[in-house]
Image 1 (cartoon, rainbow, N blue to C red):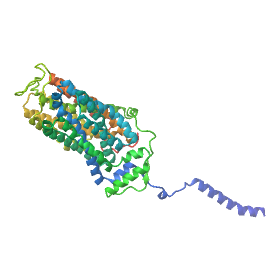
Image 2: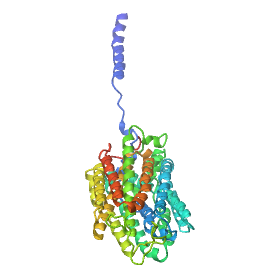
Image 3: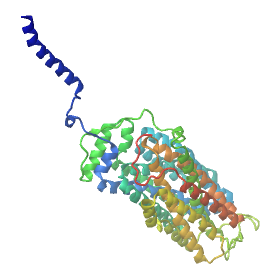
Image 4: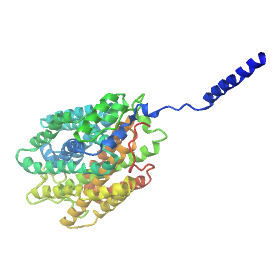
Length: 498
């Protein structure tokens, strides 16, 4: 009986044990189709693609360049007027520009930190309100001291305008950034031409105070228009506001008549926002240091060209002699040994400034092609080298037409340099430290801008060769730094975290 029972039970028990072992060894297959679908902001931006929203974004955020150009170029237009009204010497005229960029330098880092913490759009609107307010106050300056202080406050506000470029960068698909961002130079050109054109009419008639008031109008208008642009979806995700980011992206897709990816955003919020120390992290140290050198040099050359153009026209420095030629009926108002002369810009001087300013757009098509074909680094290196060569060409004694031609080419080159470094800096840093990266670069860049007036307006009067060779040497140093940058951002997706 026992044997019969054993024969019946053993096969069943063996089968049961084998089944258990089979279940333990065989991997469990799950149905992945039931798992929730997720996507990143980068994938959403690429899926939505370029459309009507980006055109609106380009027009509104690009217009920040108009306001910025009018406030900065204003100094070149009214320098002769304030020189005459307050009987200023060259160093005093240069100090105005220096203090503007000093305010820019200090607040650029502060506003960059605030933008990474509280949002790009809020800081952008605040900076425009600040700049417009103090610009209006400048027109009522009772003395030179008040004028310098109030223009410094304007510089503090202008430093936040870079957030407009960051917002554009973070919304544009990577295939469009290399084409759309360089076109923003059109707005800077429009602002520069506008202030020169309006200045040629208003300055001789109503005076420089009314010109300052008119220059503040675009900033006031833009503050109202900013409500049509949402906060950056990349920023919202970085601070954990996933729902706000999804609503923004859905709105963009609707405006573009496009579709969103299926699912929800799945990107971790960062524990802390970027800081200055992150820029010196081992991963970005070399890039940061070389970028800062380039920013400083480009700004030094750019504002050097602008101010030197105005100085050469106003003071009539001929053929590198360093002598000041007085026109018929013009006399120095502080004696023959005074460095201060009251020579107002003539209509022909305004025309020359307009022609040289138009040069800023001349290289834009080639700059766009270079950025997209050979990359950001090589394009910047080539244009910086050429800029240095053209500074040396200014040492050659030439006719008025030749001088205008050289200034035209120089404005084209320095503009292309600024274009490329703006794009590269916005692309190379991740979202969590993009604003502080741009802010710090912009801040150090103003050191070059602060030095430029004393070279272009003071040293130029004493030694044209010395001033122009210094500008050229700085450009060659920047070219070497550009060629050796460790990261190329052409075709590279924007990084969200370090």
